[in-house]
Image (cartoon, rainbow, N blue to C red; front, top):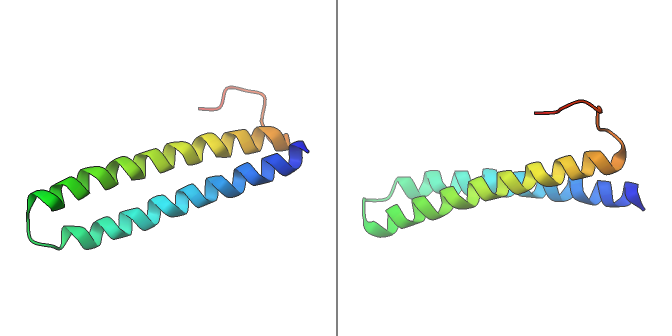
Length: 77
């Protein structure tokens, strides 16, 4: 059961990273629009989504590696 949960966590981590990349691509398209307050709001909001998805992806990746027994035993920064 631990290995199944580890694989699920790794898949969810990959989905989070893909979502962050797709959001960054969308942000590039939004930056080409004329300046307005809605573009600035979208920029700030999508930046928060990108950072949140990457943080969640890292947490899920570490949890998945830990459940699969792939941790090295040392301090991993």
